[in-house]
Image (spheres, rainbow, N blue to C red):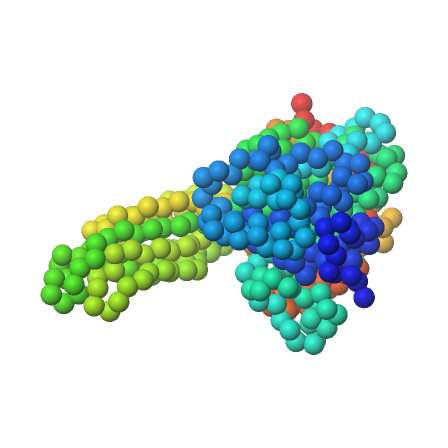
Length: 433
Ligand SMILES: [Zn+2]
Ligand SMILES: [Zn+2]
């Protein structure tokens, strides 16, 4: 059995991707709180000779709408400390500053190739059923109510396995940059990294995801990456006695409730699939008080960026219209965003060329029908003349993504890592002027 109760001084061997995945799986951390995970990756990459830049010196998330509240960030520091992370590392990664990049140069000139590695888990309580392998084999989540239910534990393991492989033999062109991204869930973590310029000199940008319908032993280009915006809307009204003076009140909950119905009533678009969802509605009070405050979180998505923009514009109009109807104020903020992306043929060609050498079948393009803010990185690189691709690595057929029984076939870790290493060694297209 893998030792998952390591302290921070006992790093798992990065060539053992399964062991790395299992220790990360056992200690899942939510977006911007990935202190233990980032520390494990940082220290491993440091020991492999990679050049690291990170923490507050890399990304400014101060005041960022997608950041968790202060108490949640503080709790994350306390938990990381209790789980063996030293003070210096908590200083580096605390307060939401878990993003970092790692670089290694090969022994000859060539392109800068970046791989996005997302680190965060989800607010899902992991299954304890004996049919669920992490539970049966003792590496299920030890962090209550949180779970690696999307495979990002595996993404970190793949990234570190790639790093170990390249460090052991630096016969490759150019340099490789691993982009350790926080908070992919809720599409929050990429935007501040892109703003910090981590993609500006990248020739080829690679993003991968385990699962999403790709069959085990295959790699498939992803299509149908939806543009999305996550919105927080706070309705501020006025409390009053619900019977004695209801007309004195301004009903924030009623405004939010009618906004929810109208948001879900936004029309579909003929040109592309769209999605609208209100996921939370919070309001506190009592039956005899006109509710003075309500907060909702919503998202809109579309398969075409221009349609998404129009859908978002209409959603914002609904929110302010619903507020106007009840005479309340509404404050909206964007807590996350991603856009659409297309794969460049020249990158897919390299992937296709090397896949056979690592015993992977190239599957048909696989529609993701979801969003990932790696698309912001891909677009940034493509806008500056570089190239990009988003690929899916088959990881078996387990519970659905984001469900309590999600799992992966761990052989997919080696598949993903060997493929990326082979792509780097083969040489990726140059693009940046
Ligand atoms: Zn996910
Ligand atoms: Zn994911």
